[in-house]
Image (cartoon, rainbow, N blue to C red; front, side, top):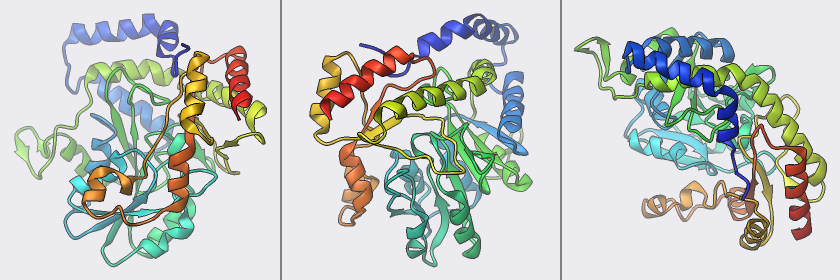
Length: 363
């Protein structure tokens, strides 16, 4: 079975540098908030083009912290897409607010801005657009609607980190952006990790305090916070990974171009609109008879994955909470048909040819 994501091959290219970074941390012994944390945050600010990058324990906490900083809680509503990983809605609920879902664009699988205004009420305090499968949402109309209604926009860039929207990087497209460094992400560490991005000095200050137990300085707690710090070891590893990340983005796009050449017009694939670039966190198709499709590929040694089989409102807990009777037809259709193929920077043309031949034989 070929790997779905080949982290071992990536490691073989950077092994000596990663081990040296880890050794340096073991030598200085500053495992929490060591010098590599600030160094990595500085690299993030340069890459994304923002004033402030705040490393986080994971991408899920990175969604909660900005809502805490904005005092979003009980009685408030936060709008997000109906089609995403559970964390996009889960953190809204954990903050005490109510998630409000909107349907998606059938070509990009991201939030449809045309359906956004109808979801806004007097209780709406934030919008969380999600960059699914490696490209950002259509952020300009989302930001315009938010500005008109005085609503905070938090970009969930867990899958779109490294992509651009009209020349600006994911993470620098609204008042605040977030991402994940989960190992399978385009830029991943060797455990859990994430980050926040903003150009707002005050928001950055508050989010840094929340990340570190609400401390303004040691043992002086100005607010309720959490332990949301990213380990020094993970920052050390990410420093070597971000150094090769621009080249890996190009390689991902080359792999996607090979897939597109073989598959576009024969099976439905995600579209990348003008003005967008995509890092292809996943390469995703829509197929009929998905179970049989996955079985056929497995028999040929090709792994597949489904991102995601249920819309958020159909997750059991949200059904229990009364969200299950609402319908988001485009998201529901996608959830029933999407399937992702192997995708990483080190796939060869031979690999892609083999995968596509099996896909086309089935469809």
